[in-house]
Length: 190
Ligand code: B4P
Image (cartoon, rainbow, N blue to C red):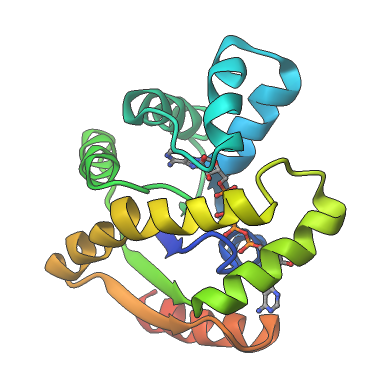
């Protein structure tokens, strides 16, 4: 069992790198952003609540995302492990993740802190916005997402530093360079 938290600002490459990690290490990739976008596409009650918040670059309520994630873990009982992508985004979510993993006899093994300068984040997300169809990939929402990240998500880094699970990853190289740095960390722990 190998459980990885991939952490970083919007546009830092969490989703991109998670797809590579999923394939190489045969883990289940749980992206809370992808789960919410799927709920929006279905027009579910959760999706309808999430859409207005996500369009403004705001977070959905902690209790909502925590319940979704617990359900997703239980739907994958045979997994070799998980990559948690975009979760936890608040300290409350980090505490809830530890509690829900403990209840199931698991824990976070590795936290990857993917660090990318703000100007590069904006550049990548604006570029993605040209083709993604994502209503949150526009300049105003991107700037708000980065602000919310700095206020609410950066403290989560200290949570994992306190547990000595954080691993710095230089995130502004090529996708292959970033993946090589990630694999070096995972292979050293596994
Ligand atoms: P997410 O879907 O998690 O959105 P994200 O942070 O923008 O994506 P990500 O960081 O994975 O993108 P990537 O770098 O891979 O969340 C969207 C919204 O959902 C949030 O704003 C929030 O409203 C809500 N939400 C989600 N989880 C929540 C939670 N836990 N609690 C509350 N609310 C929650 O990709 C960016 C671009 O960069 C891509 O185009 C990619 O091709 C490119 N790229 C990646 N690596 C690169 C590299 N090395 N070089 C050049 N380009 C690169």
